[in-house]
Length: 102
Image (tube, rainbow, N blue to C red):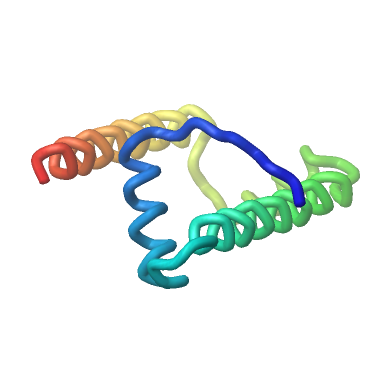
């Protein structure tokens, strides 16, 4: 059996331990079982992404096809994306601040 040592933030470790224990019980091996399932799930999802990427022959035409219904200019889309990123950054900061208080 293999072994992987990883470093994660304290918050991630706490959440992972709590979830693993609730799901697999408070006994020896529950963290390893949860980690193995998490690693497997992530690697399978990445494999699907890689397959999708390699199946795309002409990315530009794929994007044009996906965005054919959009009636905004690229500049308008960039401005809209900037606003969305700013809103998400504020939400994320508020969540982190809320979690640090608890």
